[in-house]
Length: 70
Image 1 (cartoon, rainbow, N blue to C red):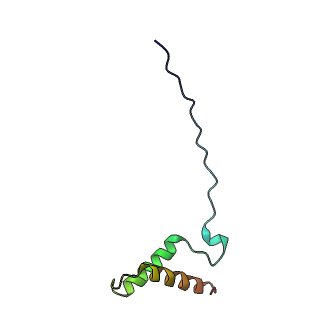
Image 2: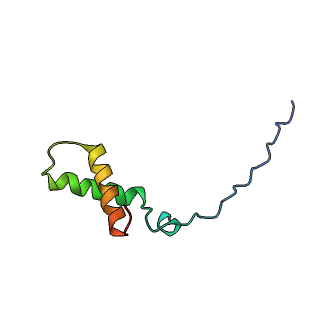
Image 3: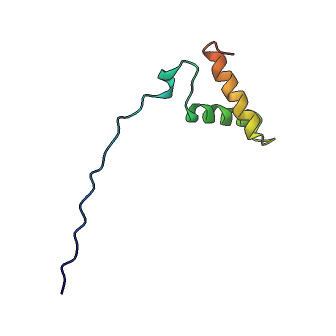
């Protein structure tokens, strides 16, 4: 009867947490921030006319304008 081979345990390497996107540039917003604003735009139309791409683009534009971007 042969002994089973023991596999060496791999160490888990954790990378440093990345900085929030908002710190990279004032005009950069997180996916969640844009998603929330896009949903608010959708709700403002009483959840009619499902246009997710247009709502997303409008949300990005509005958030950029808040920080003085174009």
